[in-house]
Image (cartoon, rainbow over all chains, first blue to last red; front, side):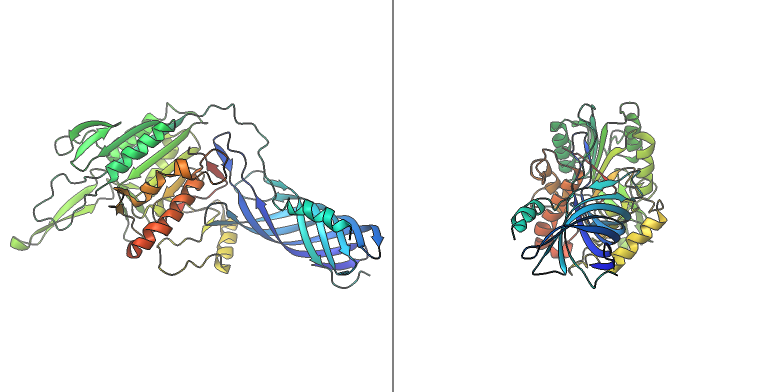
Length: 137
Length: 337
């Protein structure tokens, strides 16, 4: 969900799911895979790349935010919590027939504050659908 | 509309976030060691007025099969077990009957000595597996769990005259508690790659919790498990805030524990397969539990296979004797096979 703050700036509130695959096992161990569901809050700046009335609008932007996640380790019934900070660059496609909906392809980068790991960073490719409420000032 | 076919196929292929190792560990030599214990006969000759029989049926077969499987997979295995006739086996070689000589039996003292013997053998990149099949028990206040090696079953006589009976019970001082095992491992095994596999009652109590919350109950119920609830989230956040405090059992950062049962329940010998019910399925993990097809079976893959097999087979066949395996948490999973 995106709440416009300015014409070029949104407040984003969302639920995310990230599937973290395990690391390779060549050393006799792996960093275990986990599936995390998070609640995230972000600010997102964006600008229009192009707009065709019959097709829709293509926007690009970036955002930073914070998240609180509950994750479940792969193959287990074990769950753990961690907060995280996120940064992402994105491309939004806003179809002309659904102007309040944006389909987003993003490159998220996340720092996970897991207390039993010194560093835990996550990068990948994200797919989102978001709904925009109201218009920016 | 021309954008749609281009954007969506790319996104559909990439919904997973990939984490990867930035380091190449393939050149690091890892030697795998294992210590395997099993006790079938706890009391070689029961009293004629025995109130209960503490002897089991298949732990010696469990220990023998697990030792052979681990050896076949490249582990350097040490083992001790007592068979159903009371004979002690050391590294697979038959020795004296424990009724006459228990010096080679899988006792607590021998466990301490055997673990100490690994101290000079192992390096920090080596892996260690401890396996036990036999009795387990729990303290009356439900806070401490034990596995019961040979020599830890004592007896007491009650009553008088014809009403006299001999009752056998597990002695806590001669058994190995969860915290004692944690200390023995941290003091003697000089690697972080430690795995403990327990086919014994109440063995879930050996699993120390730190950050993670196990939604699988410690006592199996015929009713469906509640799954993830608000309580799970609250507990996970509380664990995060209070880290590194945790339970006094074996910390997940000391060793990964795969237990046959929860802390508050029993597990059983399986007369259909002549093994402990958990061990019967554990023996299949080397060939059947590589779920992600990467050519290796991790502790958690083995756990997942064993848990599903127990739930889908044993628990459905014997619902009154249902139990559920449990596993340690922590960010690292070790390769077993």
